[in-house]
Length: 165
Image (cartoon, rainbow, N blue to C red; front, top):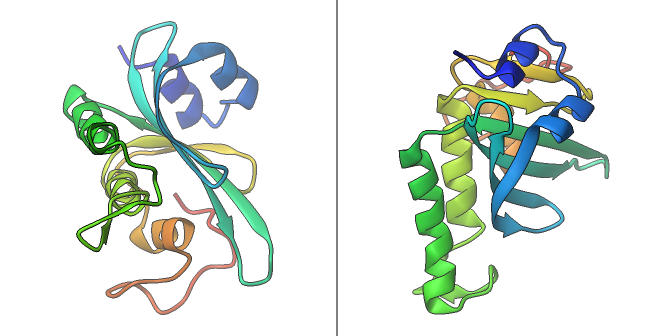
């Protein structure tokens, strides 16, 4: 049986209040004011989700807020925890650099970006509505949200609104 939150999102009847009363954060992985990652679970059915909050600042100083609840397998959770473990084992802060490679949030952001573009998830979009994304978000939308720019191999235009999920 599918999680009731997913069912509500599919019908576009999910609300912020329903997610607050039904979700429990069981582990915080990374926490800043512009990028958060946690592991959450539904209190009703136990379905685990990787939660991500991402703030996007446009070139016109407009702020857009996005939240994602990615339906997670145990393998997904292990992957997220392994990145988190790098910090703990090395007593690192997110801004630390190892061998000239940023460990986080860059690697964590890449992993979440990959999940958002490839996996089914609930998204609370910048229009303040919840949506169910069945097979991953379009890459050009995710690139704008996570990186602020379009990267190679994507359309040269953007729609006025990110309404087509």
